[in-house]
Length: 422
Image 1 (cartoon, one colour):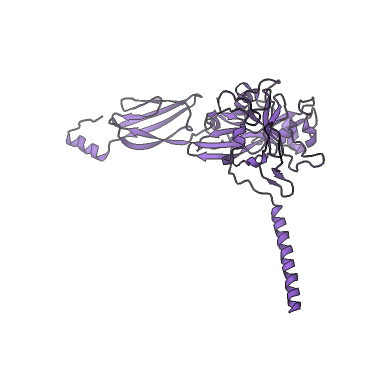
Image 2: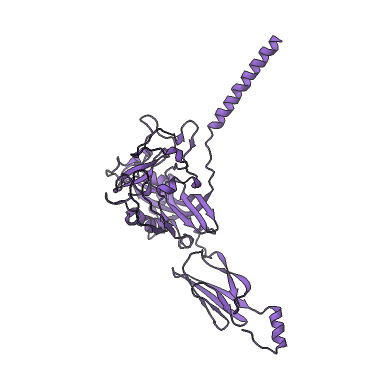
């Protein structure tokens, strides 16, 4: 019996050790972000390292915007800056990029985290830090409405990242620009934007998958206690905010700092801007490389802070394949309405995304009229008519409609010797 008990004790000890090893091994597997991802738009991201491709790109005549198209793919050159940059210097050297050298980056689909998704559209947040940009060109008021980064996002970035087709799917976003709740700084005027940076309120919204336990402050905005948002042992992002910089962002010297004097975060996660005012009206908040939100922020002229944009797109948004094929807009339903307001039937017309400004017209109002604003069709008689949609970008979509009478309407017409209803 003693031998059996001894054997049982040894067996249990072995099982316990194996179980502990299994748990440890499981803990080392990075925790996958449960949020859905969505590809939309293109941006230069991965560095080209193949010498033959680089030679071919250098020898190819550039496009009007400076990019180069080679074997069906588009590439963008970048000369690394070597000047002193506010905020601690250019970190490009840390990734092996050297001043005055030219590097090439491939245009690739942008991957977004889907923070919210319903019938009205998707709220997207770039999965990676795509670029760097100063909040303002000088140290000045950090009001989002008048910021240089807002102008850049809604012009340079917007036109570079999205084709005309993709831009039709991007919705106007009415933004609340609240103040800083930690530093007791006032907010600014609300704005409407296509592309924007997240606010303090949005980046701490649990419904979007962000963990506020990482952010504990006292009445003066200082951190009290510390909840590690990134577990270096298990390689788990507990904050939901960590983002790796693209090769392009690294070549521009994005700030991927050290957690302490000895250990750098393995994935070299980056700091990036928010659009909320910091501890002074010349400071802007941001996210640290360990996932915490900096309520104090940094001076607005820092050029090495990452850009991780947000936007809203229509529920039916699709990425343009960029193969030069004809742009065929997505089908959207509209109702054909009789003179009494009854719904005769529904048609589908090839059209643009919801929210696009369009002027409607009919080729023959005697057959069917169409409201130029709402697109509501009123039928007057049977026949064929062309319905035209003219977008605010100058693009035209035409659809032919065949208007006929229902069988019972045709029967009444015959009984009444051809009396025309409409």
